[in-house]
Image 1: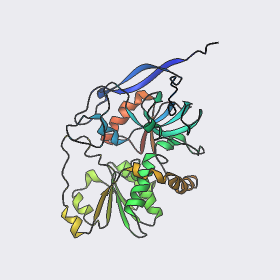
Image 2: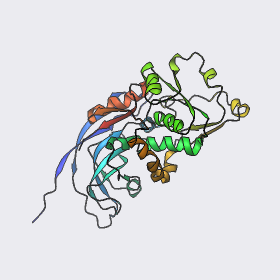
Image 3: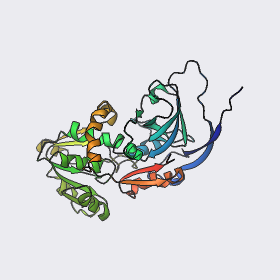
Image 4: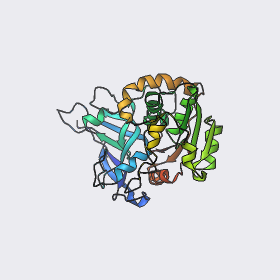
Length: 327
């Protein structure tokens, strides 16, 4: 008796054209395709996974994939007409990969679509199996996912804070910044953050426990506000630069000498081997209420376009994510 292979609609967010300047919703579109909910037959295939996507993560770095640069960059541009890709939380529908079984929940690099077929062995290796399900699944797009690991690695591994240090966090109300500030407080530091609105400044002081916070848009002399920095500057992103065709130069580099400052960029993927160590640290803090985490949740793939575009005008408050399916 032949089994019936189910073919279903697969709603996708695709890139229409490469972006110049700030992204617009018209640069993307919602498109319906079809997908067969069964892995293709291939006797040599030992790693493919079929996923049902539950949440996708809106992250500023995605903007770098939306432009085809004429200079070397560390990212490949998205393919026009193909689904946008990024971090998300998914359920395994079928698997030939030894690390994942049907019904497993995972987080990792997936498509902005309802279902994703992962055929690349390299991509399949980029998923983390979700073992702790007594916290919101959406947390694996943020505090328990890539942004959480970015905050952890940037502060503890690169910044190496000591009790009594003074820590400044830019973009402090975002997915990474809100965690860096709270981690620094746990380490006994004095923490100051900047954000782009009164609402966000209030959030930093009253929700996340920052010692001080200010609206950088109202700061007359930002250089003066930062001139007291003396120490280490971990750099994980530059959201103010992503929409510029010609990146701005760095000013006051002489201060790196006179203030004995070390500035170091890093890639979170270089620290994923510490993920289990991070979970051992962060999960008790979440369950004991020692860490607050704010999410900005958009419902449905249709809302993904405005959610992503809104990141670059500061519309989101907290970690921006999109619900694909709440299963």
